[in-house]
Image 1 (cartoon, rainbow, N blue to C red):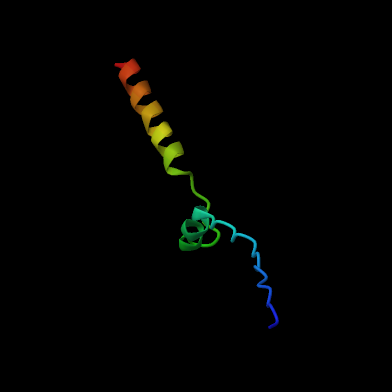
Image 2: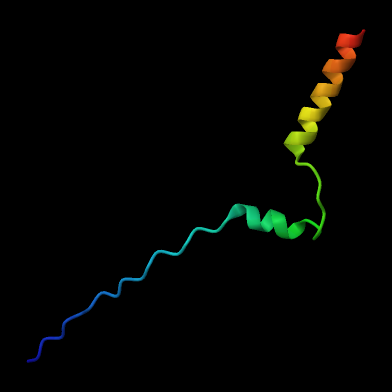
Length: 54
């Protein structure tokens, strides 16, 4: 009888996918606009300015 050794093949773990890529692909190419956080911040500032003026 001959014994057969089983060799375990070790594959490298797949890299995790970047969740931002899908969102970036949906955006129109060349569109440069402020992020939602930036626009929200700007809106807050304008409201605060208006309240201080009154």
